[in-house]
Length: 471
Image 1 (cartoon, rainbow, N blue to C red):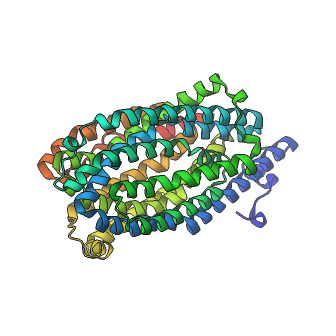
Image 2 (cartoon, rainbow, N blue to C red):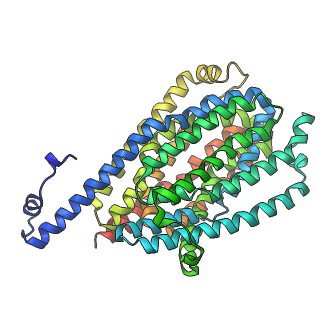
Image 3 (tube, rainbow, N blue to C red):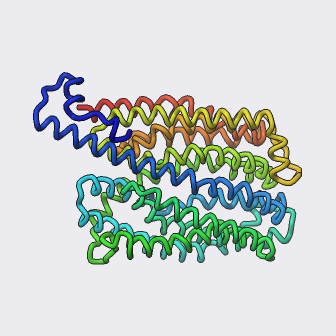
């Protein structure tokens, strides 16, 4: 809303039937000022995302056919299955980064830079310690795991790569989770536009490296180093710039490490970990189930369609991601009218994008996949398309509300519903895979959401945010 059309404090107070006093006018002016600044940063974040994030959407569209030809059908399926397994290592920080984001949001609202630096210092050194121990454990354990028995493949060359690929994926996923502190800081201070610029640089380097690696004999290990390793390098550079020059008042110092801050951040982070672990169990373990119950080659079609839907959903996330920190500030300032309006807008956008893309895939999906994979023999059924459409509609329904609940630190109630959802999903995924193949696995997530998160999230939003914060 521009300044020309922003109502003044007197008009708002009179319209609400509130006596116009100097204190009332100042309070309303302050709220309007905060709302205008929040809206400005939100527009900057979404605008920069629309300019830079298309690279994130294009990367899988370009690299997937490259890697499919480079690794072959079975090799690419193995890469996806190993990646799904290693996704759990991305949770090795126990959600401490998300906990840090909420803590920094509170510090930003209160204007307390000293406390903010202590939180950053505490999380930084905790993550360095976790990463060091984690890498050591991975290096010791990985060579002793019977990978060829877990993922049997017909190609001897692929069989020889499994151990090294698992080691590379494990280390890069773990370290990558530890160097994502800048994203938490940018989110907390509603500076996602800066994060988007760095993200664009990462994607450009990934794209260039992808075209280079297919001319090497490195196989799955090379693909892992490109997709997981390049972002790590750029994020380290980003961290040096952010804490060294952009926000030096947040620069970590070992003397500022506080066990009490680690405890409070970690206690909230563990809840985020449980939420993310449940999300992985629902939306990432599907490829692992297919690879183990059916075969690695059958993961390919499932992964291809999933990538396409994630591209469409990524457009929605360009808008939703900046709303998390904005919601956090708005809830703490009790600006719930702004929250309600943006939840409704984001939900409408999510439904339009997912249903529109699902319809497109039903009508022209075979042609899109054939063009995208350059004629590779990949068959995707209509039932699978319908299942993915239902899956991402359910995700949009939940994610629009989860952004508010997460920012308001309403976490424990979410855990109960998501854990139940994850358990149900896994319980049904294996027998459904045996009975109906990949389509059976895909239908599990939306079906089990109907008895858990689908009704629970609107209820939690009303109970813990709208009702409680208005009193």
